[in-house]
Image 1 (cartoon, rainbow, N blue to C red):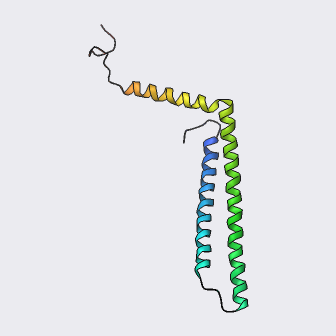
Image 2: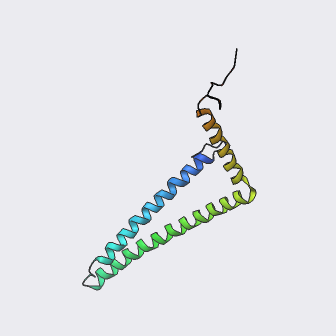
Image 3: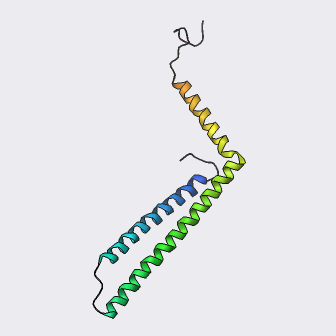
Length: 122
């Protein structure tokens, strides 16, 4: 991630970790729900009620996580839209392209078009 002077990298890094943790938890919950679905239903009503309640708790947590992730995505899209509309994103891309061009120029061999070395002459 590119370094920003406004502390955006640190905040963005925490957001990324938070998103990854939420995604991993949602994957774990989905797996648990599949296990619930593959199990044979309990033989009596008491066990069935406990099983249903446990499944509902997993589903509710999964829905909560999905809502949080959806909200984070909406916020990210809004930030990107604001950057695009203000032209900042294009300026950043142009600055990166200029930096890459300067870097390539620094890495280019130090010869001119006629094969002689460039530099100061005595």
